[in-house]
Each structure stands twice: as C-alpha cells, then as structure tokens.
Amino acid sequence: MRHTKVKDLLNSTTTLEEVNAKGWVRTFRNNQFIALNDGSTINNIQCVVDFENTADETLKRITTGAAISVTGSLVESKGAGQKYEIKVSELEILGDSDAEKFPMQPKKHSLEFLRENAHLRVRTNAFGAIMRVRSVLSFAVHSYFQQKGFVYVNTPIITGADAEGAGEMFQVTSLPLDNLPKNEEENIDYKKDFFGKHTNLTVSGQLEGETFAMALGQIYTFGPTFRAENSNTSRHLAEFWMIEPEVAFNDLNANMDLAEDFIRYVIKYALDHCGDDLKFLEGRLLEEEKSKPQTERSEMTLLEKLNFVLENNFKRVSYTEAIDILRDSTTNKKKKFQYSIDEWGADLQSEHERYLVEKHFKCPVILFDYPAKIKAFYMRLNEDGKTVRAMDILFPGIGEIVGGSQREERFDVLVEKMKALGINEEELWWYLDTRRFGSAVHSGFGLGFERLVLFVTGMTNIRDVIPFPRTPMNAEF
Ligand code: ATP
Ligand code: MG
Ligand code: MG
Ligand code: MG
Image (cartoon, rainbow, N blue to C red; front, side):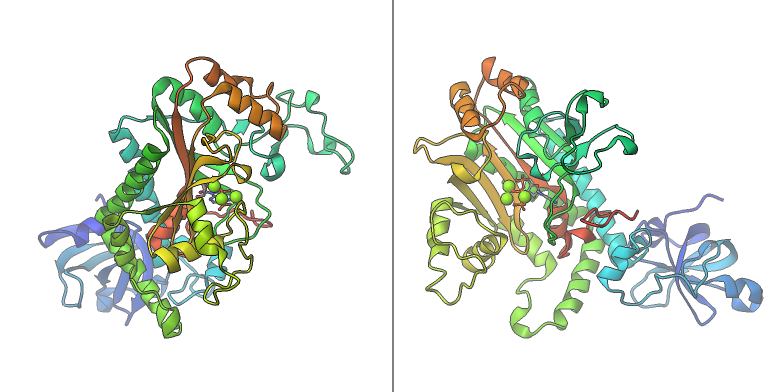
C-alpha cells in the first residue's frame, strides 16, 4: 500500500478506512502512543498501537529515531489539539534506532551541540521547521523574479575575475597536493594549472550578471558564493547563497523599490505557505525570551515582526544623515559603541547599523549615497564627486541584509576609478565592453539568502539556517 504524507493525513476532511504512513518515531509513551513525524510538517501524527496484540519484541523496538511503517485506520482523535490519529493494525520496523546512543532524544539541546550534529539536527522540530521555511523561501525567490519576467542566470562559480579585493577569496587549483608551495615565499605556478591562470571561487556574480543584464534587460542570479571571511561572526559564512538581480535602465531609486518589493513578496509568501512552521518558531522564541530580563525582551513576536515589514515602508536615509545621528555617540550616553563614529567617511560597523534600525528608526532602513572611498569601484559616482549611488538595507537583529548600487555606466569615469584603485583594466576587458558597446544606466543588488532566512525564522546565528555551515575551522561534513 502506498503511504500518505503525515501532513495530508492531518489535513484530511474525513476519517479513512485504511491508511499507511511511514516516518520516524519522535516519542513512544505508555507502550501505546507513537508520535510519528515524516518531515512533511512540524506536526506529528499520533499512532495508537494495540499493545495487547503486539509482540513485546516489536514494542521494544519502537524507539526514538526508529523508522517505521504503520497501517491502520484514520480515526478522530480524543487527544487535544489534533483532529485525527491512526489506530494501528499493522506495524513494521523499517530501521531500528539505538535509543541509548541516538543523540536527538526529545529534549532541549544547545545550538552548539546541534551544530556538531548537523546531519541529525534536522530531525528536531526547530531544524525541520527552519529547513522547510528555507526551501519555501528559495521557491519564492524564483517565483518573484519569474513572474516579473527576469531571466535566471547562472554565473560562474570558478572565476578568473579578481574584482573586489583578493583578500577574502578561496583560490582554486588543480595542482596535485605535492606540487603546492611548501612555504609562503614559493608561489603556485599557475601556468601549470588547469586554467593556465589564477582562479578563485566566486565572491559575487555581479560583474558577469551586469553583462547579461545589458542584453536581457532584467536578470537575477541565485547561487552559492564563497568568501574566506576571517571574522567569526553570527552573520558571516564562508559558503552562502546570494540573490543578485541586475536591471538595465533602472536607477538607484528603482533599485531600492525593487529590493523592498522583493523582500515583502518573499516574506508574505513564507507567511502564506509556512504558517505552522513559523508559529512553531515563534513559540520557540517566546520560550527563549522568558529566560531574559524584562528589559531585554523583544517588543514584538516573530509573526508581528514579519507583518510589520509587510505593512511599513523601509526608512530611506542618506549616509550623511545617518552619520549625523550616530556622530554624537561620545556625548550621548545612550549610544555606547565599541567603535565610535566621529567623522564623515567612516565605514559603519554592524553595531551602528543595528542602532539605527533597532533604537533610532525602529524599522528597516535603506542607507544610500555612501562615501565613494568605502564602496566598490563600479558604483555610480554622484555629482558631488565624493559619494556613490550605493544602498544598503539594514534589518533589525541582523544589520546589513542587502548591498546594492546603481553602476557607473560612463566608460571614462569607470576606467579612471579603476586606475586610481590599481584595478587591472586588461583583466576586466570583458566587463568594460558593457560600457564600450551600448552602455546605459543600470543597477542591482545582492541579498544574502541566509540573512533573509535568519530574519524570517527569528534565529540569531547564521550557522543555524543553512544545512551544513562552513565557517573557519569547520567543514566536518
Ligand atoms: P558585510 O558588511 O555584512 O560583511 P558585505 O558588505 O561584505 O556584508 P556584500 O558584498 O554587499 O556584503 O554582499 C551582499 C550581501 O551578501 C550582503 O548584504 C549580505 O546579505 C550577504 N553576505 C555578504 N557576506 C556574507 C557572508 N560571509 N555570509 C553570509 N552572507 C553574506
Ligand atoms: Mg563583508
Ligand atoms: Mg557591508
Ligand atoms: Mg555590502
């Protein structure tokens, strides 16, 4: 008999004569009640075993984590909070689980412990919920752009372009391990390497994406991105997924509108399609909040936060205004920053971003018109000659979630800027071709997918919203 998903059984509109379900045992109580989960929903289905007619040997093997198949009738449940349960007539153990050794017994585990068991943590309620939300959000990303007629472009993962500062790149080599340099002075001979040149894993698909936008009009990428971040923070991964739309004939304002509309769409999509999972995650957070002192507790629940984003426009603030707000940090006792902001031109740290969002404006913020000096070479220089048409979107609890800009479309200005920064024009000949042949105003942004998942699930560490996190000294799986 074909099995039915637990989700569909729980949503059934009638009782059913004969059903089969397959899944993993979450708990087994009183030799009678199995809470069965198959991953299709946060909710378990209760399976009631006829223990008087079941062999002791079988009952002993119904342990947490075991894979089982149950056949029986779907009947109305007397238990609170569930409409149906399965009255089991036939139970088969598909795979035993040694209860003594199974690390995912239903109890409160620390997030650190769960990270060390990334292959098993997905069997907990919280991680099952997070991974389903992540999957639905992925779909929403494609759904949004496809509906708007954007073309999905797969930019290269191995790239020869060395555009944004080589510091944080992972180098690629096909040389056998014993050919690698023995010490720092010895350089890799790339001529002997597969590509015949220095290559690295992509840190952004933007430059390649721009070339496609200048032919297809509106494009987006959604792919793995690699940065050898040496900082160990709760919002950086060495391997993450980035969404990068790029649109021809869009200026900075249109770019901000697109980002805002996009974020609202995907959050709404998650609210509409992950109700049970988000409710569960909200409850989990409320539990966590209870252990905090009253003053540190969040003013809004998770669902309230998500709805707030849907209902309120993001506050658009220029970098200069933001600096004015942050600047009096030394005199104003309320603002105690580790890095004080004293001068126009300073780069914002995440503590500043979070101050603006959480304490000052109390809503998501779009900061724009940053000093050219702290932003990448390809951003459109403003008429003042010192700021660029950049924008960062800052979210509560996270800080930067989006980084974007209107691109410098003027060939001469772009080349001059590259020269000033020592960026090799010859290496980027193909990028400069977009400005040589039919250049036009265009803009785009990069959104870190995991930072979005962080916000939507209410988790606080980016390691907890990706299946197998890659961080310094951590690539066990
Ligand atoms: P940050 O200031 O947080 O280091 P960034 O300015 O270096 O981010 P961008 O180059 O603007 O990042 O990349 C676009 C987006 O990609 C960021 O807004 C962020 O959402 C995401 N992102 C960047 N680096 C990481 C990372 N190491 N792990 C996860 N997401 C990242
Ligand atoms: Mg960074
Ligand atoms: Mg940044
Ligand atoms: Mg950025």
